[in-house]
Image 1 (tube, one colour):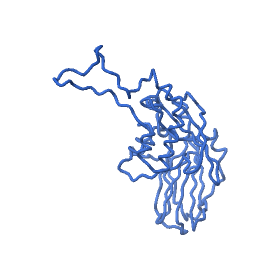
Image 2 (cartoon, one colour):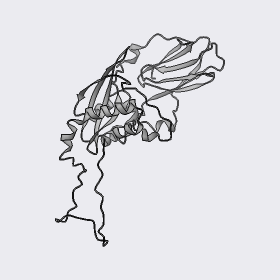
Image 3 (cartoon, helix red, strand yellow):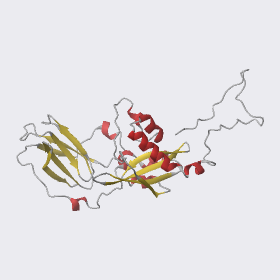
Image 4 (cartoon, helix red, strand yellow):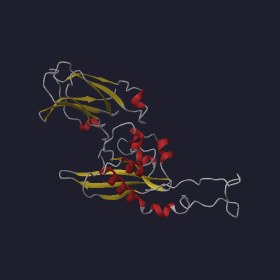
Length: 288
């Protein structure tokens, strides 16, 4: 995709003022975007094209192509991670094969975007309202793999008169009452893996400054320094908020900072031994 450039002023050979046409006005830039004229016509057909451009770039691991397809303030913009060795994460993207798109919200608002799962973790409402363009749409993307049917919700908006990808998320399926979907607790009675869990810890400025959602609750999951089993990997997840983390290899005495849903959650600790998963601890978090 291309971006138009603003009109660049110049000077005459004798050092005079900026060049003008006969009427004393600057000549129009053929590439400039006038939101009141041709944007609507172009945007009627562009949303599906930018989805295709993004997916093709992601499949080719073309970071420059991804950057060209996303909004300049999007967390998906790879230019914000210039000093890191990036690989493409295919969450919300079909890695191979065909897919179908359908516009589910044509005139989307910041509130519609924030209703998507985890969106409030990255965006504040005021900043989101400022960043979104004149037009914003929510587009459902559906595709199948050998084992699953998948769906993601893409937030498309306009920037400089062009459709771009702003965010890729999912419908928020958080239950109204998280405790209603809790599984029975499991206790690591012998402390083979888990040492303790500390709740309501300070996540630290480095974590909180990068995210907009200040309602999250954090806990530290501390693993034992004297393992009672030989596991290749220890996995920790919160089933409502959706945190997932793991420690491989020498995991003894390690700890993980996990995010919890502020209305209730459950922490699940799983040991992976020779490729087999065993839940060794499941604990409920209920707000005070």
